[in-house]
Image 1 (cartoon, rainbow over the protein chains, first blue to last red):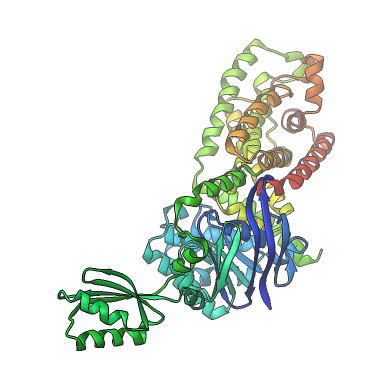
Image 2: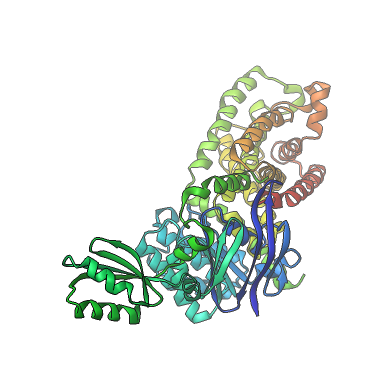
Length: 331
Length: 259
């Protein structure tokens, strides 16, 4: 069963700003999928369509086989969605937020308090339950928001930039809680992010989105194989650079990317076997290596290969601002 | 609708009301500061007019008593009409997105929010009525009349809150929204029977006042609180039409707030 199917999705705001330009992808039930891309790529717009908030201009979107345009109310019963912006009432307590949401979600009265207690416990917020939410840290706010959608055990969890603006510790805690829940209930998780390390670490499948289009998708490891190269950084102790260069250039498993004095950057398909070979060879020739490090390819490299620019680059900022403005004015 | 669906609907609507109550309890200061202006109207303006003995033949009571429902409505109508700003804020935060992507039907969001805004507005009644008694207003001291008055004003304010939700949905930014609300509140107040009886109005103002829902809330309250009459059926009927129209307007415009 597919949790999400999206085909040739196009969204035009105000007749002129094209936020989506033919997005297609599928999310398997029970998997964790991420849509990764820079600001303004169309991540939020895609999510707004899937969560039945706005209609698409063209194309098709289905959640558990149901059409977002005609079966919105059925879909809304199955999803739990946390938007990028804060979705809590900050002038009441954490418990009160969960209470109001549990009523909105239609949780029967007799199980309400039990569910709220479970969620507070799962999210590590029992002690803060009666504090007014405006006193919470960013990480606590996010955990409370995610907790509030878990009240109903949604089949599909949709998170828009779940850790934006959080420090690394808080980010990790938020993700630990999400994964803890996932392990227990096996819901499908679909999240948008511009942090490639998160997509790489937590997603089974990643869709790279740029300028309103999915440029490429796959498992993080299969995507990284597309870039194919790991990099080996070598720093030699003595001045045998010429000799080393000669030896290394005869080795067919590596290619020399950079040779700068006694520093070399080599690229290779996999460093696991190549690195010992390189080091042995240098050792046999009495060349002393003082430092060595390996850098694996990241999704950033994949992104750069397929779009020609970085994920967190400012070049798209104008497009992003124009889209946001149109969304804000609602035209 | 099945029983559990009805129960669910009621629970969702009252969740919105409960939310409002909990917010007011956490921070009641707005409710108190909002009451300052009507109290001044009552004490200063009402006091002066009462000494001058205005409209004495028409209003069949002293002026302070007469103007009490009017000044309550002046501040509670403003609160109800300004309630939509909440939606503008919630639109800018993520709350509205969450609500629109959750199982709660949009009609229940509107009904719940309209009732919540109305109750927020009618808190003014609870503050000003005791004060009016204190400064000597000659209101009917009957618990039944006073309670009916509270229910009646809350009922009437539902329509104003719905109108506010519709305006917020169409205008979308707080600047535009507050501009409009500022522009309509005072005319609404002056073109009603809040400060003076319909009989003394110029004909064209009276025509507006006849179509002004505020007139019917105030008229119903005067019957209950001043003239000790339970004859509020006509006013209730007029407000029902207004409420239905206003809720309809809010329902057809709410989807535009997110687009």
